[in-house]
Image (cartoon, rainbow, N blue to C red; front, top):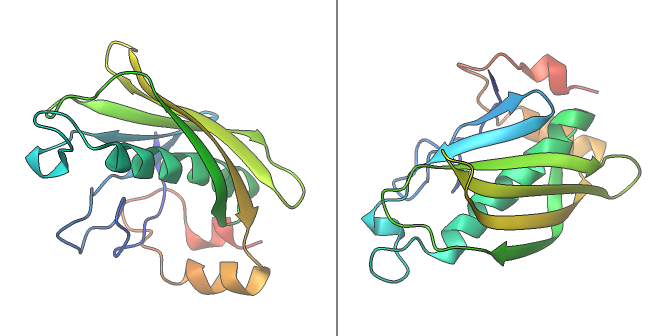
Length: 157
């Protein structure tokens, strides 16, 4: 699996903020994936991961799918989340995202959060807006490509 770049200050994939989930996303064929194990600090109710944490994780993963497929960064415009099962603290989970429509001015993606046995905990869909070229190019300079097989050049369109 090929690692995607990340932004050090991001709540989901960042590595320099103490509150970050520190999830690294990877390209696996036609999907983007990120592994996460919730800790006590991610609780909503005792022993259960907070839904906002899971929403952030899946939104980020779904957003990377059209960004990578189109080699152009995008932002969320709309997401729909369905919580299927509660995620226990300490449970290893994987966010999976894929592009469902990646052309024009609005890209679409879907995804889910699953465990190692394929049990689905969260499902989601989203719409993503590609950044203007100047925003996209400016943000490319803020990403960390270290440890990843993707490079800034691969995102430069």
